[in-house]
Image (cartoon, rainbow, N blue to C red; front, side, top):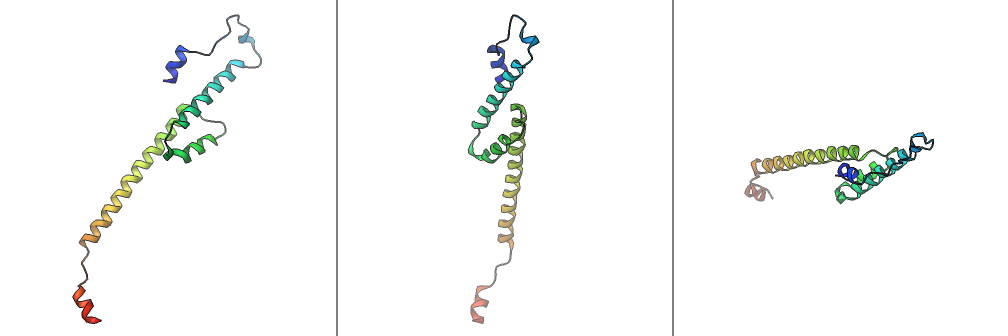
Length: 113
């Protein structure tokens, strides 16, 4: 969506040609600022389940691109799905073991007391 927005509302460029000879790389700085703003908007839009990842991404130096951050979030989401499935599977196995395990004979236990 940001790519489409960039097409419609592109960073203004110099029409006299002076920017091409610019020594301070103004255009590059403007693009970097725009990229940082997009990254911040993306990260702030994540739900609270990604707070730790958000902090880790914001601590990166240099900051990643939005595309890289999105890839990182996708990987974390896949990990959560896999571990969630595995955790659910372990709980099901534990429940099955409990159901199949032989029950102690309570009458025997009571007679021994």
